[in-house]
Image 1 (tube, chains in turn red, yellow):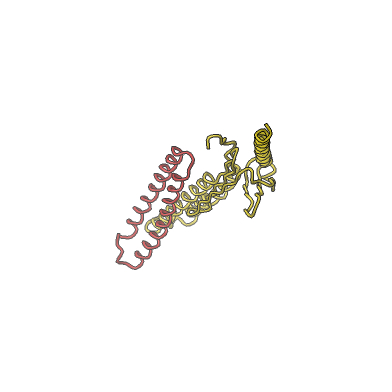
Image 2 (cartoon, one colour):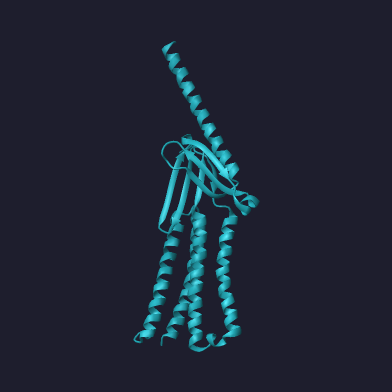
Length: 70
Length: 183
């Protein structure tokens, strides 16, 4: 990833802010689900599924970003 | 408490959840429509550097959709009301950072009202239940709960059962005191 170019820096900045906010919300979502959910097995299963799906898309988008910002 | 019995655990009616997911599905359909439109009319947007930018945009949008679906479900799942033989508990997840638990003892209830509003509320039998408490406390509001009339009836029955029990206990105590005083 080449961030010396101002355009690349801008794109990477926007990307990391958006993804950072969404990751933070996801983290808190999983936290409150496990903490306050009535059924622990259900909460953990749902959280694992969600985290797996979220991280899969996140890694794909990061890979795409690294290819874009060369 | 040992003698506390849970009568009902209530969430919003499933139709309300489905309505929220229908709105979510419109946003998801927007992504599919965008893909089809671009493929048919602006194919250059799917090739080379522009293709990578479009793909990155779609992936971020998919992340947003995934998060939205997850939050819709956990707010549905974590908002619940519990009616026991002694208390009415209202658990509200107002946002990611606000979790409120209110408790009301059955003997503090003054009045309970149920209301079914709107087309879907009438068809699928869901609505709001308001439980008025004694004193300065605000009334309890259960929003979009299934079968509101039955819930209202249950709350009032529990109140009557509880007050009858309290009266019986008071009567027994009075009799015991009288017996002690006048053997």
